[in-house]
Amino acid sequence: MIWCLWVPARCSCLRIGLSGEGTDAVVILEKTPFQEEKIPDLLKKPMHAELQVHNDIYCTFYLSPPPELSEIKATVVYPATEKHIQKYLRQEVHLIRETWQDYKNITLPFIQAQSFSIQWVYNILEKKAEADRIVHENPDPSNGFVLVPDLKWNQNQLDDLYLIALVHRRDIKSLRDLTAEHLPLLRNVLQEGKEAIVKRFGVPGSQLRIYLHYQPSYYHLHVHFTALGYDAPGSSVERAHLLADVIDNLAMDSMYYQKRALTFPLRADEPLFKKFQEAGKV
Amino acid sequence: MIWCLWVPARCSCLRIGLSGEGTDAVVILEKTPFQEEKIPDLLKKPMHAELQVHNDIYCTFYLSPPPELSEIKATVVYPATEKHIQKYLRQEVHLIRETWQDYKNITLPFIQAQSFSIQWVYNILEKKAEADRIVHENPDPSNGFVLVPDLKWNQNQLDDLYLIALVHRRDIKSLRDLTAEHLPLLRNVLQEGKEAIVKRFGVPGSQLRIYLHYQPSYYHLHVHFTALGYDAPGSSVERAHLLADVIDNLAMDSMYYQKRALTFPLRADEPLFKKFQEAGKV
Image (cartoon, rainbow over all chains, first blue to last red; front, side, top):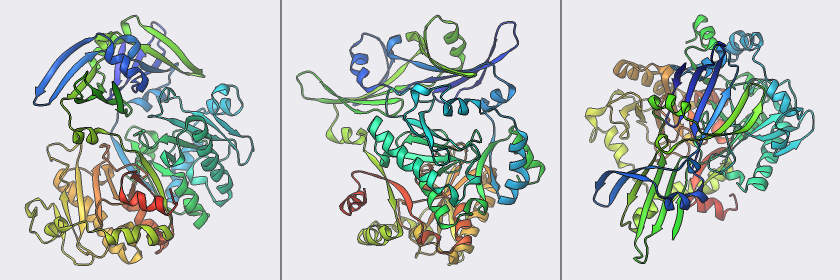
């Protein structure tokens, strides 16, 4: 049986009960971007074309491309817990304005009580998984990191370039933990990340959006590198913080992120939202 | 001959010289969204699947769907003039990191030398235009503002709700001019703007993204109010600044925006980009 959970513009997420076992899987389907070099082929192949509208110099057609020229990326989470399933369900979203007090009284105890596994991060840092995908590493245990392509990026085109820097040290949960002590680490990520990306992929630093999420989806400090022209999910102002801004803020005031209120979006069904609701903060 | 002009994530635009005639056409290719009801069919069909990555409970595959389940929308402009082609050409965009010195030496002289007319803003403030569209006004000359629906919003649905607050005072060009002196004005915009929108449109403040652009598209201080679920152009972290963050930064340090470097995107053909280039800052 298939429950369709979520169908944004070009992405689809399904809940599939595998036969007899009662074990859920989350399947996310995405149409991948065009590959520029395949387009001449695409236009040369005979295919079914249906004229939709013709007005003056404008007309629109629907084409049915051959299988080798269309591609769907399927991400499967299996076995999936209820938490994984909830993560992909479409829900009402609200902004939370979290003061430092709110962080200490509501968010931090919540994070500490969670046991969301980040084994996959440790697998990458320890080269137990994705070792062949590493684009750059600074092995320093305090100020080093590993740069890997994000699983959302198939690396076939640069338009949706997406890499993640995972820091080696395991004691920084998020933006909220950062102080001036972490400036050397953050500057390494910014500088070496840009250098590694221009070297490997030819995309200059001025065309990269380099940012942290708050709240992050996992509490091990990581930095997103996305193509500036790519409207990456989570790159909106209510969730993203430019690494260059974070560095400047910490250089101006070491305790900046232990003072400032921070805004972030939460889905109404998320447990953290309920905690803020119970505290009368929504 | 085919020149490929423009290939964003899931959309492609080509320039095609039709045989012998020297007449151009613009062809825009777009992968269409999934249709929810076709997904069970899609998953039941036998198709080629290639495993890409497997790490812990996560794996990704590439699927090649049959032609009847994938679809490309083609928009053709033929014959296309040079103007049509320019319209669809992808312009290279770069991020600028502007220090306060850069602002004073490059950006401010550039703004002062421009004669961007903002008569349309004064027309609204003086009720010479759009007076019937005003959703809320605080008439105070120092701390007041006018709230109007943005012209991009047709007001037919709340999904893409978009309003603009234009302040009455005319001496604030942008974020760069703000100090703690402006806190009463900014707090009025935040508070009264939210109240007016929930009253008129029923959208609560927790579902509004309230932000300033830097660089703004016109140099008279204004604040954007968009539906949180709407991926409004210019709401990405590299251009938007949440009003609540701006207020907190000014409350912590009156000169925050005269100290901090600010990042913003510029197209390579914009005059301000050339100024930064001439100054060796790109």
